[in-house]
Amino acid sequence: MGFSVNTFLFLIEAGYIGFMLMAFKKFLWEDTMFAVLFFFSAFSFYVYGVNGIRNGLACSICLAAFALIIKDKNYVAGCALLFAAFAIHKSTLLPIAALGAALFVIKKPKLALLFWVASIPVSLVAGGPISNFFMSLGFDDRAEAYLSGDNMKYGNFSNTGFRWDFLLYSAMPVWLIWEAQKKIEKRRAEMGGLCYEEEESGVYGAGILADAESMRIFNVLSTIYLLTNSFWVMVAKASFSNRFAYLSWFMYPLIIAYAVVRLHLWEDQDKKAGWILIGHAAFTMFMYLSGKM
Image 1: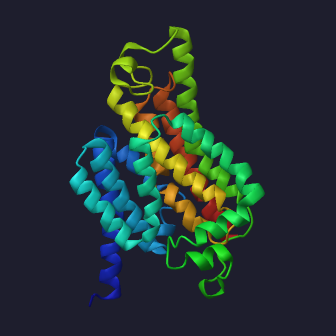
Image 2: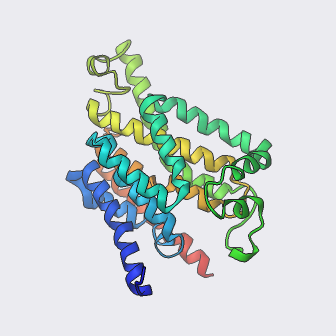
Image 3: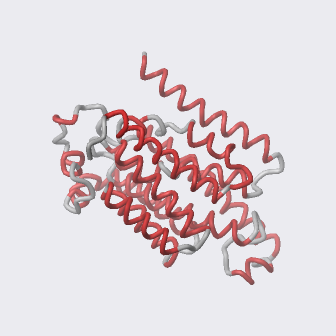
């Protein structure tokens, strides 16, 4: 396009951070900067700002599109951004498909949570054939090399085999989602059924942990994360599986921030939110320092 390298990378970074800010502003307008700290301190933030820049930009555009579609219900603008994200990186077809499933098929995160749990033994038993199947779908122009292990020309920066470390990292949002489901079911049992707001709105958990609109948004975001991360779990034995993990990890900071800001999960919510942020940043720092040793 005629840009210098500096100008090109500046435009990529502006989009990478700018679309993320747009999404966080819409989802968490009253606590935007607190939520943004989760994004800046995420394990994947720096990596996809300097290495997987095309993937990072496309996923940030997806975040903005999700905000327009889920929060504002602006389907025209949201779908236009989704098309732009897909044009930049075809792998975003996965979170786009997960969005469709979360909006129209899976209304309760509990079903997606069960799917995530089931994906672990499936990957351990049949990870190879599943990777071969997804390799044939052509999510990315380099997907075949990533999944097949023919990655010599890209450099071996990713370990092979099932990534238990990645699974442990991915489990933090899953734990928060599970914690929310557990508290909803406990409150339902205490009340002997659905609460009034939940029954009126048809939104799972409405009036228990948050208002109907906040719970609807959290349920949709949770389902998208669980479905996309389940895809990574099933191909976790592939080389460069971090490329596929990022198709869910780009939502990681949003899920955590939304849960600790909008949902009433604990009595000392503010204190726990602060400790979760510190732990989130500390993990990233630990991974950075361990890589220097």
